[in-house]
Image (cartoon, rainbow, N blue to C red; front, side, top):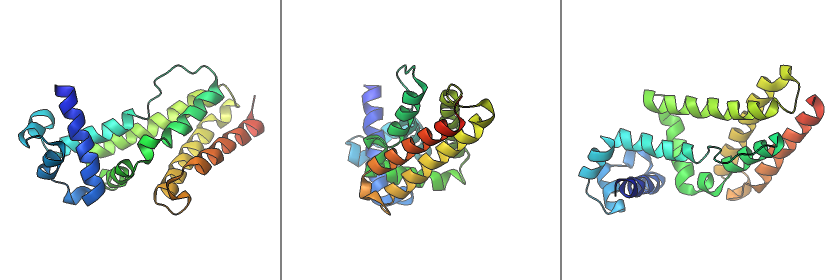
Amino acid sequence: MEPVRKKQLIEATLEVMAEVGYHGTTISLISKRAGLSSGIISHYFGDKQGLIEATMRHLLDALKITKRIDDPLERIDFIIENNFSQTQGASSATNTWFNFWALSLHNDGLHRLQCINHKRLERNLAYSYRELIRSDQVKNIAASTAALIDGYWLRYSMGSVGNGDFSEAVTRCKQYVRDVVAQYGK
């Protein structure tokens, strides 16, 4: 039952944070939303901070490459699509991400998770780019692609463009990849 209960609490945390933000989120609200006692949060996660970190790890785990993709361009496309997936674009996830980024500036545990996420994205992109472009350009282009993904995700999530539809952002990121491969390809 532990994995089921943890998942219920994480999903409830996403919903509550989407509705009331981090500062309005309480253990009581989360436990009520999950239909579980508040003591179970302490049992599984220690405290609100532990639950928030577990919730962020849940969102970060959804970004992992879980299948083997041999073609480097297909792998980059998968990374782009995964960053703009329904999981990452759901209002509960976007609000949690916004809170996470703000909190990570002042919270060591969340800052560590953000650094891991940032490095993993660049490392996964660089791994694929090594097969496609000149080695002297890999690091810079991987960093630029990661920034492009993050920037478009932020713009489209905030509704300033796209109104929740990530398809244009995905297309633009993929076009950037093809442009740099054409320019710097081996």
